[in-house]
Length: 281
Image 1: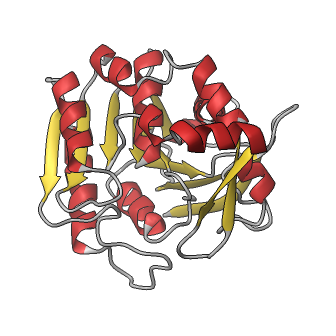
Image 2: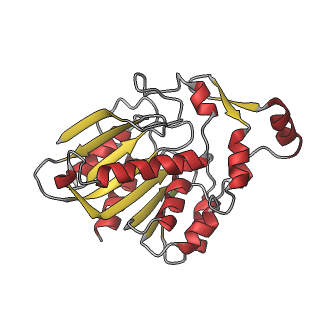
């Protein structure tokens, strides 16, 4: 199995993106799977490498990447050395990043283009990334499947309200404590301004209702970070979707960071197997 980690993909006039490729090199075109991490996440979080290996073993070309403004750097992709970039992130930038990665790996000039079947593209998003892939799948005509893992159903409700919103506008920044790293992570007011300018595009309900492709929603019943109701909302908006609930699973399906085991946690293994079977079907 090929595990090509931390490939720097350069962009003119924009931040570079760090990308990983997992696949079995055999000259056979394989279905492409692109994975998007969530809020305060990164491509190397927890057990994501084991997830990538499982997809590669199952015959897929698996791609995961760090969003350009997730707070990581090319030199230090894990955790958040670049808090200024984190503060400058927004949903539009993440959609642009995903589009760029998709274009890059499906281009005929891509070094491993012979290993990819660009007619079969599946998008997977965890948590906040679930919203990103849902929107992208509704916009793009070349996506075959979209899969939400503990995905959000709404972005608007996650912004500060009332006095907190007013204070954010006045100061230009609000901070969220990262429970694991103890960093004060900034959000600049541009995040909210960008959302206001793009409310129609960034409406996950609208995107879910528009989907015409197979749509899988996986959620743990004891997820305290993203409510189970959000998964039910997505399923209600797209009745043709498949809703798969995992009893007593949390937001990260039993994983944590760092993940030092050699096998996937039981719940995440179920997530991976369910997803692989869904795509292959």
